[in-house]
Image (cartoon, rainbow, N blue to C red; front, side, top):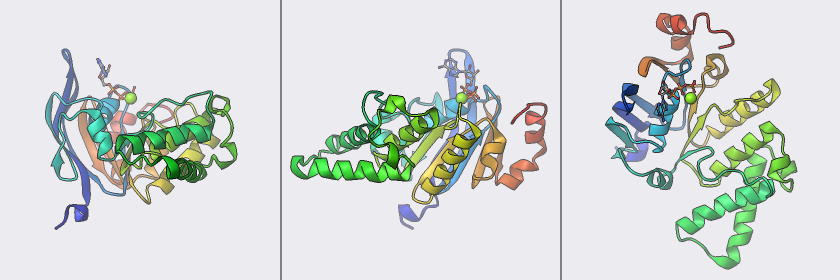
Length: 253
Ligand SMILES: Nc1ncnc2c1ncn2[C@@H]1O[C@H](COP(=O)(O)OP(=O)(O)OP(=O)(O)O)[C@@H](O)[C@H]1O
Ligand SMILES: [Mg+2]
């Protein structure tokens, strides 16, 4: 079996993370399927962002192992994760508010080619510019391309951040609460975008509002007190008694 035929792209084996005396994550083992949307849900303080940061290489686990594409990547620096195609939205660069949406995406795309030594001055500008156009179209910002990023609406800025992440051609895109602070309308737009992006790549989504992601996730992991409480399809999670207990009484989840 070739590596590409492996349905699992990313795997954690008993990973734990402590901050001083606090054990934020306590031995989580899970497998993430290629070209699927997997959501990590759980109440506040469950360890979701900590787990997310281990998955994208922003943090190293205190113990346990992380495998990407069958390779042990535990403890590698984050830029190595990025070079392998593991990208979290917002990691590459912050949005430059005075640059246009198009320039923001182009700069991110340029960072990729220069990093990989693929820089060809004559063809490069046009290629990068066309790539930025394609990405802006993809994230629904084609008609905002020339507008300064700082003048975009909140939802548009978040879409631009996803566009900046896409500029580095991620195979695995990680998003931590991508709709935080958005109106219901903006939220729907970004959720639709995430579903369409998942056709071509693997997506891992962190969200504490379970209802928001049940409908779009192929698999869900539920964290609670730093442990994996449940995992499965939306139906499995909807009917899981332990999950119901954890979410019980938590309004708007
Ligand atoms: N850098 C850090 N230093 C110390 N403690 C931390 C750090 N990051 C997280 N924690 C603690 O680890 C626990 C898990 O936090 P984490 O941010 O992973 O939870 P979360 O599920 O993302 O919560 P939320 O829904 O609020 O985003 C919390 O008790 C938190 O206070
Ligand atoms: Mg969090």
